[in-house]
Image 1 (cartoon, rainbow, N blue to C red):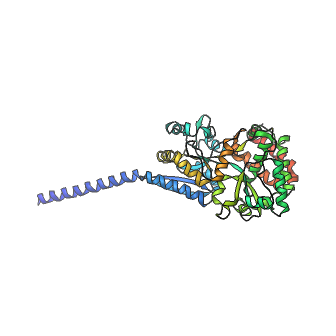
Image 2 (cartoon, one colour):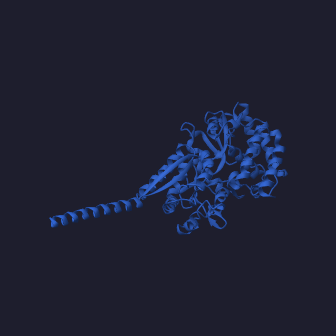
Length: 421
């Protein structure tokens, strides 16, 4: 009996040890299968699809990482991002370079990526976007794509009304507008409910009339909004409004609702970034052309908007090791080209192949040949609070252009309060 009891005890001990080892093994496997959370802002099914492809490729290369990705519509994303970063942050977010990035870096909400830049060779591959990725001497962004802004147009409508070439000067553009209106076609579609679409018009009128050096001084809060050069921009804009060159009730439409005016041939042109090309219907795409915003003053060096999109690791991220691995995976010439194609953009990676898409090629040439500088975009070059107030002022102006002086006076009071200048 004692021997049998001993054998039984040994059997129980062996079973316990096996169970313990099994639990330990399971715990180790579970620890290895770490979860990484990614939040992605997107606009349209094609943008979501290409990001999903990139995530799937990462998962295939890193089967030990459990990736959970959340796709959020871009407008909602802008509202929700500050809350994520300051509470339970995801491990990776996509966002924008320039002042938009600096806003969160300044508040300690983005991880310093300077080490990644050195280790992964980004200094050479992303040399042209390093400055806009930098705050206070350190890099907080991993650039993915950048894109051109210009005028999309319906080639068939231009042909129909006898516009034989893309307008290169302001006078040529105004002449094109007259021909289109005479044929019952509105020259420009714009979705002013998304205030940033109006900011594109402000940027280009300011860049063409006053140049990028002045534009950046204004963005930095160093120029009064009552300055005659600012009023000059709005005066040129007011002429377009007075001439009914924009769709009626433009403030009622966001970008998605305004694009059908172009697709249905009710409007001929739209000032927008090349990122919208992925959403063009197949029957419309062959008729879409794209050209550089015309020159207004030949003495002003030609500058462009070329916003840079980027990836970031929140400072409060829980799985930073896998987040750094994800950034390294995405920031390659191959992945840069894949994202650029899917997002209707240009790869920020200088070693990526040139784009094949005809419109992206035109955008690449426009930005490559720019002599007067590249701006990020109105609400990416400026501190967020001032940008929000400025764009609200643009909506008020479009609603009632006669109130221009009082709108600019109000913006000047806001500038003094925010910048204390």
